[in-house]
Image (cartoon, rainbow, N blue to C red; front, side):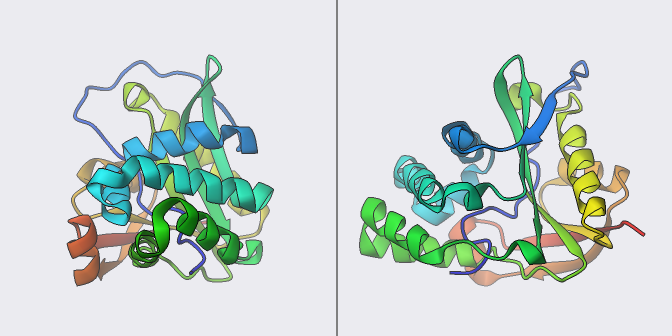
Amino acid sequence: MTTHALQSPHSLATSAATAGPAITAVIRPARLDDIAAIVDLHSRAFADTFGGAFGRGHIEQGTRALAVAWRRQGTASMRGMLVAEHDGRLIGTTTLRTWEMGSYDAGAAEMAFQEVLGVWGSARSLFALSLLDHRISHHEGFLADVAVLESYRRSGVARSLLARAEEDARARHKRFLGLYVSARNSGARSLYHSLGFVDAHTRRSLFAWLMFGQGTWHYMRKSLL
């Protein structure tokens, strides 16, 4: 299993709602006791990813398998993940991954998936998630899991999360940020462009299209120099 097989490299899920009033969210590192809220948020924000990875009728099982896998990996599963809180509620996430953080405990994750999903379900899910993997370069801060609860979108939460992730990347002396965004997600692409990201290349995958219903992603970069 590859480094990011248990995290979605998909970027911000957007809605057509008009911009709401800006709110001040608390941005902090994720903790193990956040796992239930995080996987619930991700299953909603990345419904296409979860449906493709686990099957439309098995998203609940897949969410449970992911939570079990993260808990078994312990604090390592939370490396680089940030959450946004408002009035004590977890409302958003993003993850900054870097080369030196290393990989997850693949064995623990696979065992958790097999126990919850069965051998075939586990193999299918891990294969599907591997299609979304990204090899992080030494100078890169790779962003994943940019998600905000729908009722809090367009209120500055994603910008706050990304600003904190950028600060952390600079503290690690990274030269650039990178992320993937679906070619269909014009709202997220507009946000990233406004934050200084530029299109670097396009990634296409027939298998990803078959599994997730979308096979084209743009890799976007932002220089930190």
